[in-house]
Length: 602
Image 1 (cartoon, helix red, strand yellow):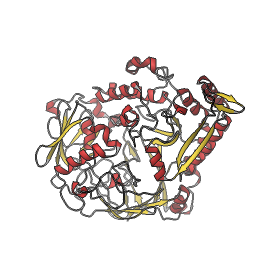
Image 2 (cartoon, rainbow, N blue to C red; image 1 turned 90 degrees about the vertical axis):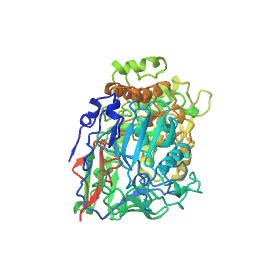
Image 3 (tube, one colour; image 1 turned 45 degrees about the vertical axis):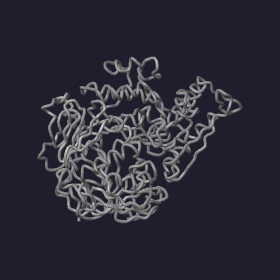
Image 4 (cartoon, one colour; image 1 turned 180 degrees about the vertical axis):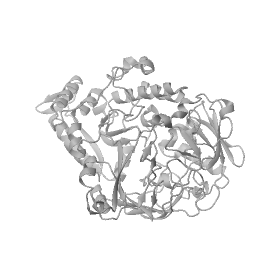
């Protein structure tokens, strides 16, 4: 097994950065935000796919909760997360070995204006929906306009920067941008393409199980029962099976998702052989629970998959829309009071490192030293409004490893006192004299989160704070999450090696009041917006990375999240008959890898 280093995968960064008209204003097999795609026009398969993988077999995974919708592109409903990626396709597809590169999928070629003011996609004549009908320019236009206006919030932000979309001819569509944007052409290439005819006379925004999608992906929905299972069947008539981009991928005949009330029942199903693959997020459980008979006999294999992607941010997000967490000093107290090392040791054996910033574990991570060079230059205009740590350097607090976390509790008390909070008769009171109480929202079914919150609330009780934990089902969790009806909530932000416009949807001001957005903390900060803009307009690798480093500093020092830990490797237990290629992409176990490039060995 081997992985490619980040520097090699980003070699395109070191190539020509300001693409000329001669270099880019012509149809190409793929595009890179900087430089040129690593794979040539005549490439035969993705480097991490096995072109000789046999077809057949099944992959059976477990999920907690349920689902009540088959439409993953709208705000409403709860949808199995794999549906969005296994059933739907886009004009371009991502190579998970190149952070800034896309290759033609539904589109046979892509052309970008020399000044990045528009992008054109030419459809493959063989592209088909699962009912055999051709994918047309009209379907593309309808999909973009629909998703961009009434679709899920993840589609809305980028669409506001589109000035127009129109057919050039029967096979080509042009999307024009309000302002030149180097990344927007790539974002547009990743929109799912829907069949317009399927939605004629129907309300696209309504969620339900009555409309089974007609899409272009390798799989179709074969059977399902809400709350119990969903079965995806490999489409034997899939139009793209022979594309180099698809060769060696999506070869498993059936992808089946079994749904369970909680993680304990799901693990028992795996040990019994009902499931044949399972991701494990707890290092302690990996060490302690995976020695059952099927592992001992070799029927089940334990695989650890390395990766070089950012840690992202996982933990309890504090909602700054609520008075409880509007003051950064209160948020600082919440982080100080969290006995991170004790919880990590209890649940993970202390194996997994704590998250220290949003882009930790990657070359995009901030330094904990004082800002220098371009990073300091980018942040200097906002110095008066930056929180402590942004310029000076921020280090996540380290506790003494005990449950009592004495040093952390003392620091938390000091931060609360600085914010005007006072302990009266053992009760922490707010500056206006009211008892300090707040709610933590969790989805039922996660034993790990339950264990974390139980230890954490005990620590907060020692501060005189009253914490209510609301455990709700998946549907209620999503509804309250989408409407920001919480004080503190568990969330995981998975960040990539190629951050760009999507950062606005995570922590941009426009998303603060957008129902369903991922800006759960309610971030609206001029420095954050400016650093994102810097990323998107950088003309060099050095400036781009400096902008990300600066963004990481601002986000981390804003203290929006009580961070947990991250897995520098992914842990997957699976039947020995399930195999994957020797070459692992730099993203490791990520969307597009498992089960996409796996196969069942007869």
